[in-house]
Amino acid sequence: MPLDDRFYTAVQDPQGDDLAYATSLADFQLADRVALRPGTTWHNAGERTGMVVGVPGGYVRIVLDGSGKKVRLRCNDLAVTACPNRCREVTQAIISSKDFQ
Image (tube, rainbow, N blue to C red; front, side, top):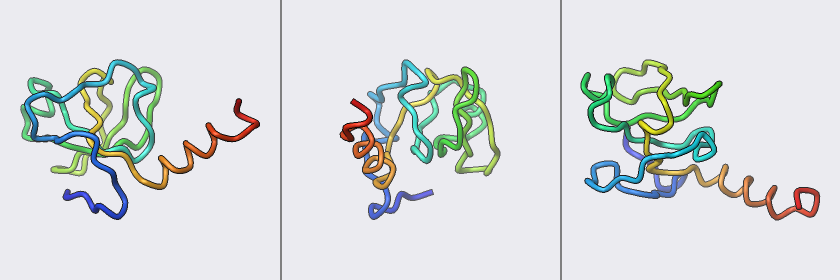
């Protein structure tokens, strides 16, 4: 699925050889675009990218772009490639608010 620049800010190239893979569930927010680590079951099945739809108990739930299947993967098998603009703005507003500090 091609990214629409009006809604996403690219963080890294999903086709790049030097992707930075996640180390924690805290690296993800809803609607993030992610790339799968080579060698995982779904990557071997031809899937390359997806979108985060949840972060349940120790896993990241994503919808795969190729098949549309919803799957759970470990965070270190995923690299965030783009962040949604609106979510980033809302997150920054919350962090900047006096109630959060």
